[in-house]
Image 1: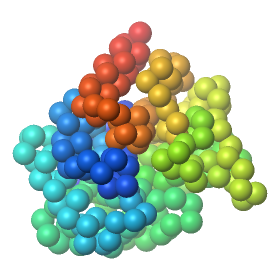
Image 2: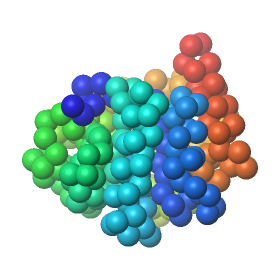
Image 3: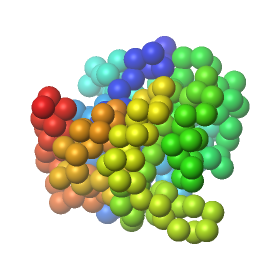
Length: 234
């Protein structure tokens, strides 16, 4: 039913109501999917539980309306309760993305089932060694970064000393080679980074503001998808 055995993190959009400059979130999500994005994460630190559930249901409906339930995956950041509640209301929410200090992945797997997608933010410090040693039985992909400091996700790459650790393209290449599951990279990613990112062999990129705060989110999504597809064909 859910997309664990058939998901694509290559073009990954993260969004919540605080990211869209007061524009309609669902319309931006629909435009992004129509232009070729394959993975949607609902993430908000300000929306209420009811608002998040409603956004999940509406996003699921959009994916269904576009006949892309087998091509586009929908996950929620951190909130296991939101995933379960949205599913109870009939939404096809494929899984969850959690960080190092969020709900443990084994707990998510217990409640979401074997066919759900579970993503984990890779540990900031000792990143390569962590990815090599991490038991990935319950994890379907790693999220890593940032490439550069992110205004939309300021905690991305934050270490225990409060410093932001950014990643070079060479580190990303080593990270991908070290991982036995897909790796998606984000945090400050811009369209001009996509060629170099593709050259590392990483499975995809994630971004927020490059689309959600663009003057024309649809056009931004279209150009980003075209650039990525062109880069991976080379």
